[in-house]
Length: 103
Image (cartoon, rainbow, N blue to C red; front, top):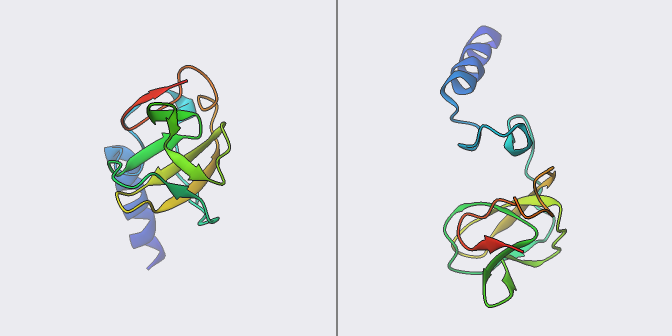
């Protein structure tokens, strides 16, 4: 069982399946847990990763509740949210947004 788990994790790491598409080390989320901390995203967003300072329209942040500008979140179209924690691009003008633009 242990060898199978190691093989699967190695394959995921090699294919990039567990990490965002960016080559920026600050974007890597591999190995991080996404905590359901009561945060909520704007409903209707495309499933994806959004920084706390990501604006998705007319001054509306992607994260509606429990938003921390330098944290990165996973949002789903129903408004579901979990928090990966601090990311070095979040809170800056290089912040990642699945759609919309950073501040």
